[in-house]
Amino acid sequence: MLPILHKILLVVFYVGLGLSLLSNIVGLPGNWMLVAAALVVALATGFAKVTLTSFFLCLGLAILGEAIESLLGAVIVAKHGGSKLGVIGSIAGGFTGVVFVGAFLGAVLGEILRHPETEFALRIGFWSFIGRMSAMAAKFSVGCVILWILIETTWS
Image (cartoon, rainbow, N blue to C red):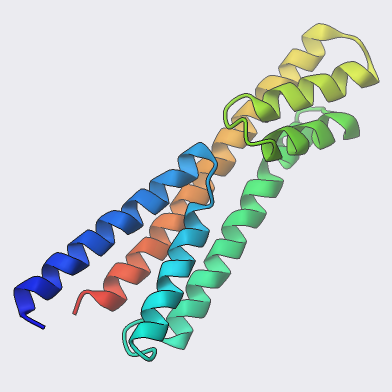
């Protein structure tokens, strides 16, 4: 393949990877799309570009990102006084796919079910929102590392 064409195709590939990474922000599985791309490149090149070690590193990082995203919001809610129902509501709301308000609404509803003190429930909802945003930022950061690994291994 012509060297310039090869580099152009790589840039197009990297743009696609970048868009996959950005999809994390709206709740799509961007890190998993990066892992899928790593697997495709690994298989297409006979593990010459993305080695087995690099692939499993990307896979492990994606799992770590999911664990952080799932647990960080709940930990923050619990740390700020949320009840078990508030924590469960925060997690369930985060999984609904309503990116910015799901965890907030879930935590508020969980707390209102436990005790109808609205001010307390809203405070826990606020912390759930902060936890969700922190979790998304952490998962995005993990995705940046995966993206860097893919660029580093495929550029040459």
